[in-house]
Length: 99
Image 1 (tube, rainbow, N blue to C red):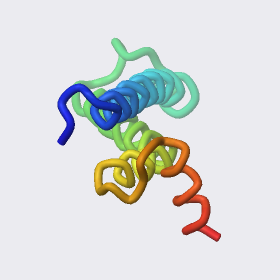
Image 2: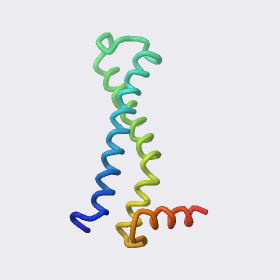
Image 3: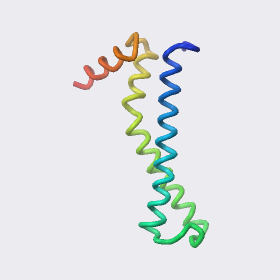
């Protein structure tokens, strides 16, 4: 693995984007579940209900984050496996493989 090369930079950018998507989706999912599904404030729910909301929101955040970050992860893996020399070639190679 290249320590200071474009592979680690691309991987770091992917992980940052994935984390931001997961955090945002989780927070919005928690708000949505409490306001639309439970129709109560968090403080009015039991610990078991709060745990259930947290687990459901985390599951939703993981699913959304995975779907959104999958194309970028494929490009980074193309770079890592030396199937492409740069990001543009990786994108073109993956686009060609999809068709």
